[in-house]
Length: 213
Ligand code: TYD
Image 1 (cartoon, helix red, strand yellow):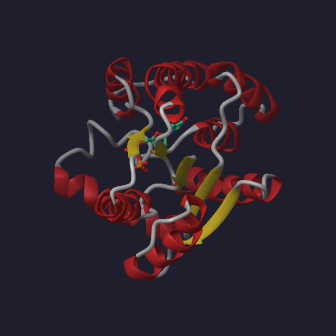
Image 2 (tube, protein in one colour):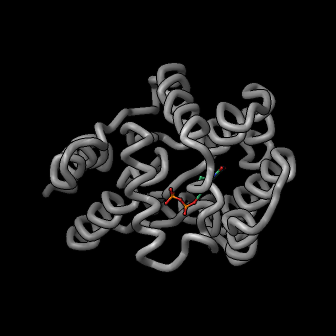
Image 3 (cartoon, helix red, strand yellow):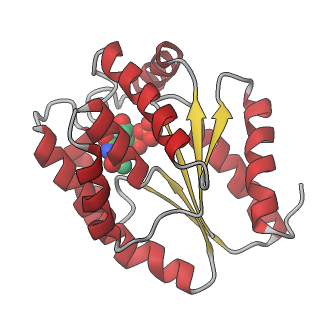
């Protein structure tokens, strides 16, 4: 079972993912938690390049760096873990490229779909949770978190984008989710952390079978 977590900056997906992992660990269920960019050793170098607000990166170069990160991530970690029977939970995956580089940067979405297919050799998640909230709210949360952790420059390239960009990302996720109802489920991320986690549990746990809260 392969599950991805998606959403705009500051949507609370990583927090919900951490809670879910604690629950799964308690239940003894084998799982792998991972993320993009940066889910492999090569990817960690790519992540530093991609997120540093001091780097100026054109849309095409940005696209190929994310695809390189993903190709390595799938080959080295995700596919082997799935083949070993593990549940894989990833913080962002191919839908981020469709939405950020497509709806956000204006690259052709159908082309991005094909390039993703090539990068991951056809591996799409069984289920994708899309955390939805107004971008004003998410950005405020993300910028505050980055300032507090002192990573507003080293990891702030996307947080520095104008609100308009983040509005396109939110609308892009909603549009893309509506086109893939067989695997995409929306999470109301404006709710309290407990209410958000209740939604996540209700979506994920039944798909994992025997795990209960
Ligand atoms: P990260 O710090 O992991 O952000 P978050 O906590 O919001 O998940 O940064 C990842 C950034 O990279 C995020 O702004 C979205 C962007 N991104 C893309 O533009 N395309 C992609 O394919 C991926 C995986 C991420």
